[in-house]
Length: 345
Picture 1 (spheres, rainbow, N blue to C red):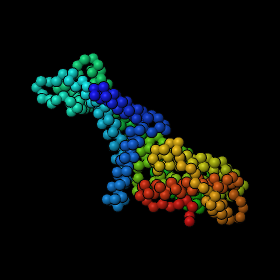
Picture 2: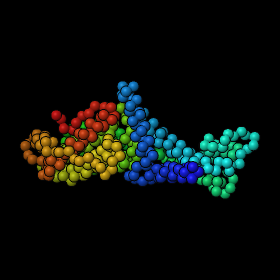
Picture 3: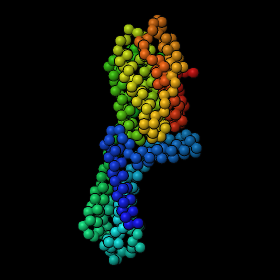
Picture 4: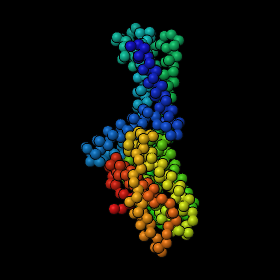
């Protein structure tokens, strides 16, 4: 029992430290504790919102997920060091004027809590060089967890505003409808399209680095992740539907946007809408029917009857757009707002 408690404590402390490193410093990895805590908080908040509050209150899920994330770090570190102290709890020096119980898990938790918060009442003191060094390490770890929590909050909240502003930018430009997206492509020019693509790439990278961004729901569909998915997909279609020879830069940006949309859908499908299933992405849906509809829509948009710039695989494009529709449906179910497909029925 003594050895098991010690091993479990060391493993838990190491897990928290590793989770913090992955969450704050790794650009694409998921911290196992943070990821699980975020998803659990989202499920609880979503269940309460949809079953008891008629869909209201879901915009608090993101802040609660951040708080839960930070609490998991603190509580797991606290418990980990308590398990390390547990086999040696009788070796500490106790103030004789202070009553203590059987010197078991409660005392180990008390010692760990007083040490990690650096309270230092002085009623319990570590004896021996090893225990003293462990106590110093825990005090330093508590300071590190607090600093990590502050850094996490300061890093996440500006990115929430950036993600929402991208959705609003697409909505204000009319890019949430195909005609508006085509107007953006035809009138914006290469520099504006580059800026839009850069914003979309940055938003996706921020989502990969901080998955908790997924759980922030403002209640406004134009500020949501759905707007980003829908707007980027419609811009891709508009770039493919651009009239031939009049906009010679559109094929380059179409290839870029196709990669942007594909990567975003990959991560949403594997990490959020389907759980954590990296390397097990669902097969691409058939795109033959959607490809035919896309080609007909593009031909109808070209008022002069000319062909579009796109000479590639319409079926592949149709499959990507079908995936986007499936993701939008799933996002609507998850976040409690209405689904609006990219391809009209």
